[in-house]
Length: 217
Image (cartoon, rainbow, N blue to C red; front, side, top):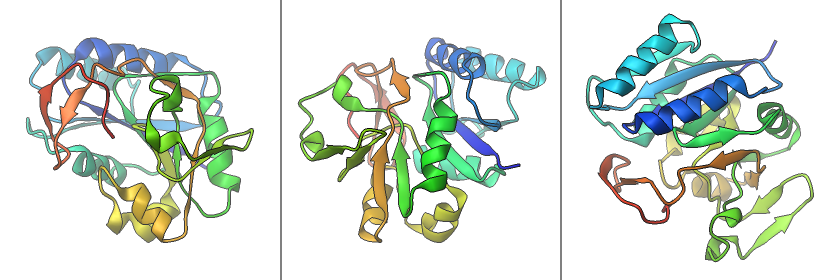
């Protein structure tokens, strides 16, 4: 049986993390999955305590602690992928809530859509309709066809990662995939309750400060 690997990147904000994991664990996914959480150098003891509790209760498959260092999105995601075994890989931030059957809907697209590189899980027009990157969007009915992927939560196949993972970057992998001939789609199945209350991420993918401005992707 095929499997999806859900990789949650956690950093500080235990209240956000608890809300995300509660939704992830209690919302019907519709597809078998393993849950891998990478604690990317959080200093708040509540974060590690909570994640350790989830691991001991076998509610998550794998817990990664980056030795107290914030190593950034790309490296954290790669570490999660290295520990994963799923045919489908999903990168999830710790400020999300999920809708019923979200994973099955996403996997169906990844499984059946020819040359799909990355599937975004959030339609950010609901949060910021003025974003110019959404001015060229084709609503196909079952999903959005986009030229510039805007999403902090997304999925891809292991085959895509094995083929083109060398070009993965925390802020531009979708553009490299597009140049290589892959399509970019968005299936709006996840809510981003942390929009506008984001940890600022620098050019190296590491969290460097807290702000309350609109998210930048």
